[in-house]
Image 1 (cartoon, rainbow, N blue to C red):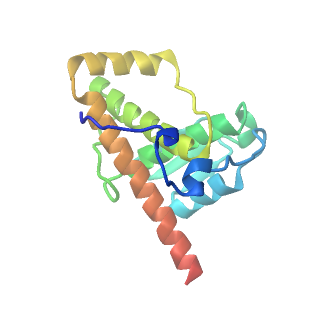
Image 2: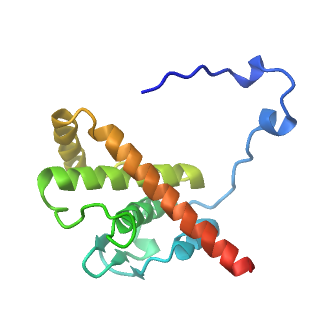
Length: 180
C-alpha cells in the first residue's frame, strides 16, 4: 500500500474549468441496451453466444454464453454479468494466461471469481453501471481465500486491473483499425 496526499478541488487554484466542472454524466435508459457498452463488447472480439439460459465462460471452447438481455433486471445487471464473463475470457492461455484449468478447485475458483468480479466492477464504473455483487456463495469462497492469503485481494485487484486494461487495449485497437 502507498500513501498519497490528495486535495479537494476547492483547495486548488488556477485549475482549468474542465477539471472544476468534472466529467458530464452519461444519460442512458436502464431498461435498454447501451450502444457504447455493446460496441465495447463487440470490439474486444470474444465469441459471445447470446440467448442461452445461463452466463458462463467455457475455456476449452473459448466462448462466452450470455442469456438474452430481457432475462436480466436491467442494463446494469446485464453488463455487470457480461463484463464478469469477459474478464474470465481474458484469462485464456492465448490472452493473459491465468490458470483457468483448475477453476473449480476451491481456492483457485474463488481467486478467479474474485478477479472476474473486480474486473466487472472496474468496467461497470467506467461505463456508469451499478454492478452488484454476486450471491452469498461467491462471497463465502472469497472470505475463505482472503483469510488464507493476506495478499489475495491485492493480487486479484492487480489481475483484474490487468484484464480491464487488456480489454480497453483491444477496444482501442479495434477502433483504430476501423478508422484506418
